[in-house]
Length: 617
Image (cartoon, rainbow, N blue to C red):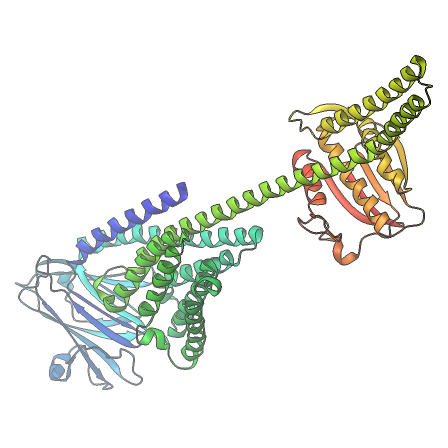
């Protein structure tokens, strides 16, 4: 929650800085730039700005004439043509001349021309205009002073375009004060956007870790989705535009990065909403989208991306909002956070697609950041739902384990009571026969009553023993592993004898430990019971169970033939059983008791003639 609040604050702070920079932008007169071989002209027309009228005109002359120089360039004024959309700055075997016309509204002061992907070889600015050429990063600047009363209103620049395969040429004119204010604000925004991209990238790593531990594919797809978004935003920051790399300046590269993010966004939505089960028709639509994205990626390599050329993405994204709304109506609460996040993102997509150059910073920065916040809420809520479901399953397992334990207790009591009940039956029969034959005297009656009371005391003690065994103790106590093991074997004595199973107790090192005595006894009872069942079901001729105690390690071995290798890794899973009419939770609960409650370890392997379970406490 703290990270989400911090991210929200960071986005709001960045947005406030963007507003401040937008105010500075009002002072800019002319902005011309060329991206992917297409030139865009934006001339300031805001009446509140310093240049409240369109008071700068850019014209271009392309001519391969060695006779043209700075001295006679004015003679070719009629050859200059206004710089328009579609104009190319870079043409082979031609010299480029730029003419800048300042009209009467251009104010007096110091100004800075910022330009990139081209150099100024010569210019007609006078010495008295204090010309200073410098660079900031990969961009170049030309600073000059202008006084309309003494300086010319027409200037000529001989250009040398940089030989980049994919151009990002631009030229901007602003006042000196606004240039430095904008530079400072721009650095703050650039740093803030960098932090946002870093947080989005870290969110991707976090969800990758969540997938590793939960194996929920929605976390994996969300990780790749966040990586894709972070890469797209990094590209949109414009840093790669100043790298002399065909990949970095390639429209194909930008398209593939975006399509990568969209593809995994679709996969994430499919798994997050489980559309295959809950909204099969919409799942089919998402499958179509994924096929379209794959085809479009192929087209972007060899031709151009159709999705981006015709601005189809914002309209495709509306489908995700509908899916979230549909799942929300079905009662899937995390869909609410997804819905809010996707509304912001779709709004940003429409603004970016249809109002591209009306914002100083692309609205996708704000939209994707808000989307990340709400999607984090959605995934957190889903994690909560998963944990709640696991807690319910655990409670159900514990309840089933208790029922199974009660069944085992009743079965063991029945085994223990069978002989005393038979003895009591014979005692009653003896008393009845003596009475019929008139040989019932006080001495005989006292003897039989004493025998009956002895059997009843034994039966009562049996109940007390089992009651003590199944009563949970929340406090650890000191006890001997040997004595606790003997108590378990005493309770199972009749059940084991009935099946002619030999039990050998080997004591290598008796040790008193401090732990949960009854829980240890329950685990040992489960292990011995499982060994007994295996020996009986496989009809072993000389069945034997060997219990070895060596310090804090207790092992239970049998000669029932062992566990199949393909079943070994499933042996401790809940509900796994190879026996009919069995819950399959005994070994699972035993492992939970040993490793979670007693902080020990329970393992199994095949040794000798059968299986070997060992407990370290």
